[in-house]
Amino acid sequence: MKRLLPYLIVSIIISTGCKTKTSMADKEKYKQEIIQAERDFAKMVKEQGMLAGFTFFSDSNAVMRRADESLIMGKSEIEKHFGNPRYKDAILEWEADFVDVAQSGDLGYTYGHYNFEAKDSTGNPIKATGTFHTVWKRQPDGSWKYVWD
Image 1 (tube, one colour):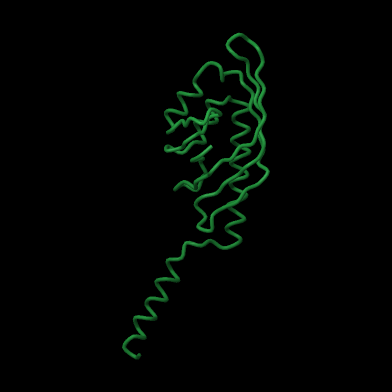
Image 2 (cartoon, one colour):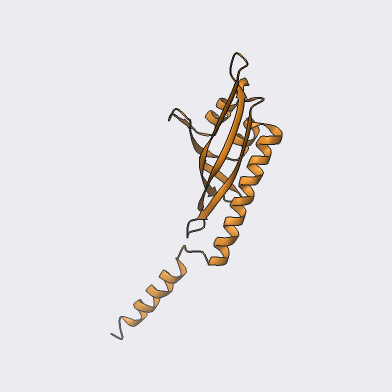
């Protein structure tokens, strides 16, 4: 047992030091950061348009699920998608109803309701409401970008 004691102590130190759990205070801080990112995202979309907001807040590997269940994969494809003139004057508003963060503090998610208004190719109004779900990833600089929307 005496020969194993140093190894046991080192194992405990390593396992304690390698935990990826965040404290409850950190978790609450990260939740508030995600809520703020969500609000900033919605504000940018409202003020600068969908192209600016969805491009700025996307992680380079972000994926978006469209209403027809198809996926838009990667920041450049998201930028291309929202570069379509039909989104230029579209109105999209939303607010998160719920936010949570992984115990590791590097991923979080929100969900809530959205309202969308635009015009189709003939000028007829399009209105849609629904529920959104966004997965957020903390970036190396501490900011949050979405990886799934």
